[in-house]
Length: 154
Image 1: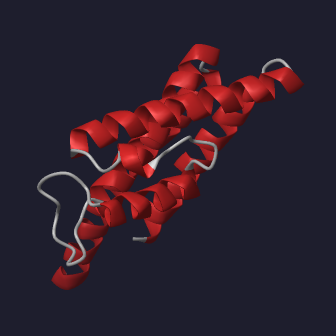
Image 2: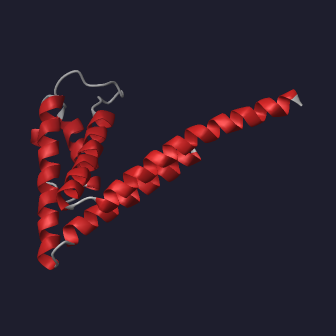
Image 3: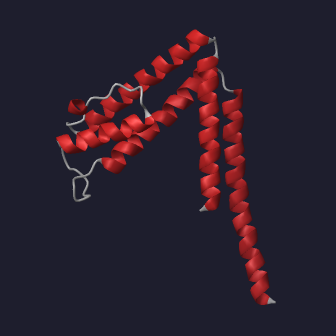
């Protein structure tokens, strides 16, 4: 009887944690759904730049997998360009601008991501007014949902 009581207690505690996380996730989704055009663009840019930072952080390594202390080698810079273009195919990213310090490379990449998003937004707006923001909102919501599902699986 004691075993089952403790089991129910742990399950209840786990459920409370999940409930708090679920409420935060729903609040975030609600903010995205109600956000104006500028808020949506800002939020999506933030998500995109966070992704670019994660790519740099995960791949700023030498051939042995050790973090680079200084500038990226040409080989690492080429690999970073390939990785970044998988996520940001419209970004104008040149390897020679990545063969520098990590901070300089990050600044360059974040600017390139921002320029690519602005160009894509403008091209969608040329098709129909508001389409760029709708696309950003949709992609942000899909990403939020995918991350929530992945979190629940783990």
